[in-house]
Amino acid sequence: MTRHVVASTSEIPPGGNKVVQIGGREIVVWHISGEYFALLNRCPHEGAPLAKAVCVAVLHAPEPGRFVRTRVGEMLRCPWHGWEFDVRTGQSYFDPVHCKVRSYPVKVAPGGELAQGPYVAETFPVTVEESYVLVEA
Amino acid sequence: MSVTLERPTPKAKPRRKRAAAATLTVIDCDIHPGLHSTKELFPFLTKRWQQHLINYAVHFRTPYTSTTPYPRSAPLLARRDAWPPSGRVPGADLDFMRVQHLDELNVEYGVLQVLDSLVFSLQNLDFSAAMAGALNDWQAEVWSRPEPRLKASVLVPQEDAPAAVKEIERRAPDKRFVQVNLSPRVAEPIGRKRYWPIYAAVQAAGLPIGIHVGGYGGHAPTASGYPSYYNEEHHSNAHSMASSMTSLVIEGVLERFPKLRFLFIEGGFGWVPSAAWRMDKHIARFRDEVPHLRRMPSEYVKQHFWFTTQPIEEPERTGDMRTLIDWIGWDRLLFSSDYPHWDFDDPRTAFKLPLSEAERRAVLHDNAARFYGLGGA
Image (cartoon, rainbow over all chains, first blue to last red; front, side):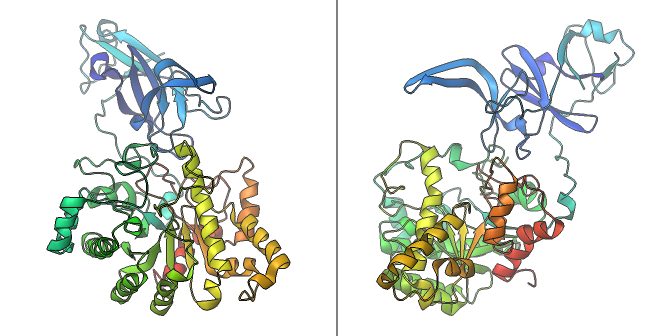
């Protein structure tokens, strides 16, 4: 597993995402309420791009006529058939054990910490003022 | 742990082709072209009907006048990644359709199914005929001419049989049209005699009939009325297909017009064996009510009906799919994607049942080639 710097934190707006290629895989990095999450950009059902998902809440009804919304914005609703996935774990709502999207650990690090390393690429300038999103994949 | 810096990729690169994709050639029996605005039909409408469209707009035989009766799950029914960058509505941008669908999935031919303005369901029958004609011109000129992979369907004013016959006779010589479209939800069950002139014309033209789900015939979508949810209404698509098949068989349409071939589009196929078994059972008990039927209903079903795959059945035991298709026939199932609608099926991933190369080829390509007479079949 290698850590990849994929974006500055200001680059991805809240509720938005960025699609990156890491080792031949297409990974989507979501920014949800100040936190960042990385998932394979491919629904396990029929392969739809999850970057086009809608961020929804967990909606459930303890009984007909009563509704409860929790974890607002933390479920990804697939752009094709509407399957819902937990952005934190990749687990599907309807079958969390058997049906999940591959998810990757994410870390946010300040530029100062990264700039010291020997790996700064010219194509991705890192400044000490900014912080960055790192995906471990 | 090392830290590498990834080059930013602001635009998503084309998604990787799955292993099978490169080798598959697909005939897609259900592609929905979109009208960005009904004004785009003006070149194909007389001044009289242009003015009618401006003054009165499109109205269906349904109690719901300013909206569709059910929420349709996604804006304009569409995949959320199918909105073209041009700003046109999903399905209304040919270049984007080529890139996202025809090229991406290696579609050799796609059959257009026009749901815009739903001509079958228009209240005003003369307007229905004018709109059917306009949408047929539009398919031929705006879609099939610049993109020969796209084949057109003859739309007809289904409630006005003589006008429908004229439209069929007018289009039949044009090889861009590969079928006649009918709706399963019309004023009366589609096997009733008021529609027989249409069947006579279609048989004479030698075209197959594609019946796509949907339509507003003035009746509730289920036999017990208007359900509360899209969930239920969507499910009732299968019921409307089963009723249509029953009507066509029992009314004797297939005895009277033995060369007709029907393709049921987007209605599923899990219900087909049980519908046929039940019809057979009833025939054994009250055959003398319908003496015009000279064979068992299941025989008509196996001879005259084909089915598209989408939305693909997803039984919890995938092996049940094989049992099901074995009954229906591996030569009777035709791939359809429903692009650009939200319930789209991807030919590379939709089939959870492992298929042999021959089965895959039959369902994704050869059956449709034979059914429509495409690709030298």
